[in-house]
Length: 375
Ligand SMILES: *Cc1c(COP(=O)(O)O)cnc(C)c1O
Image (cartoon, rainbow, N blue to C red; front, side, top):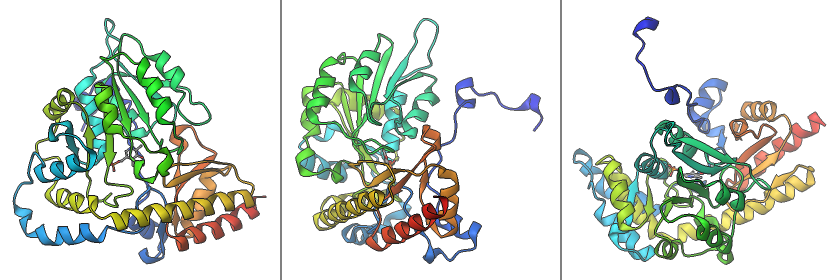
């Protein structure tokens, strides 16, 4: 295609950077000539236990229905979610992963910034890249508030909200930093945000929290009707490949999200698997315990190797390694996929997902060896 005939897109689309996802196992095998089975992936915060057994059985039992469109309203999944989280069905929006929820919020509440309306969304430095991209794709302005100790500076974020702000995004815990703020801090923050500004609270890692840190986010939506809570089945629930997430919001907000949603945004296998996963408490408990034990080992090894890390409430940890690109490549050659977070301005750090004990130990052994060479 000649340049003259190149289709035009708005400037804000041209300036978007595609999201860099964790490197797939298949791609690593291809590029490095390694057997797939020898590769471990600690790059995308997936659940290392594999799918919940109940979800697997649920998919098997409905796979014959693949010729039919899924339920566009996700009735059965919403009934299960409503029961579990103590809300009405009309407080729930399903998404093709929670990334879809983030996009629905951006699309429903943002528009291109103009001279007479500097439409913007406020988030923290180190905010999840998928959210940053969702905002930029609408043409609205992204206001990025400097982080405090790698976490959200909620005080500065509240101050950054102006008459042109439509959405404030907070992630608790945050990815890629793993930082967390308490319910008291969240409420003090929500008290300061105008009622006509949406607060999008991304809780993708909620299930990994210690019991003492948990709070009832659905109850918070009742208290703060401008709050949208986003959750996912991709992490602790072990269904990243099936793509299902959901939002809890008031019926008014839910109605707006529903208007911009693709009719069949959540496929039938994902709906069935999610219902079963909600019910698989043995799997969820095991995932939680495995993560706690793995995380403790990560901290231990970081202290042994004198590497800085940020304490994490998720299922991943950010480690300061210096030349992250070099270490990333050296790990790949050993069949270990981790995550570079250079796009976040964290070029000296790597983000590693807590895997199975044997996967973690293989990573530690490689890290020990590679950091000794560098020293
Ligand atoms: C992983 C993650 C999500 C979930 O993405 P899905 O689209 O549900 O797979 C959402 N927010 C954050 C901060 C995440 O790290």
